[in-house]
Length: 112
Image (cartoon, rainbow, N blue to C red; front, top):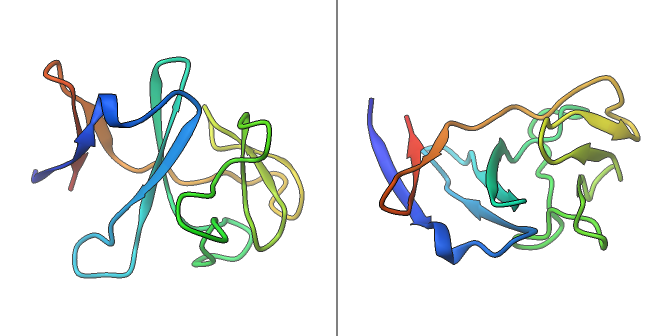
């Protein structure tokens, strides 16, 4: 398994989302959200229309209240912790988790 350092844990503020990638020579990106001190990572692809990026501009993945992930193309809203769609065109579907971990030293690692 190959590991790639994305950032330092301290680089992600609470209720912030940040995109990383593309990975493995593809156009595929992932984004990481920090909520209640925990990290949640999702592939940047709406399950309503596979391949559609979630953000309308760089790192704009969260709604105004910063408590849900929003697909800019469809307006679907997703729970940060589970990726489950709570409202909109992707209802009944979920985002796909991306493989990350935070190390004891404070690095955020993408695992391929």
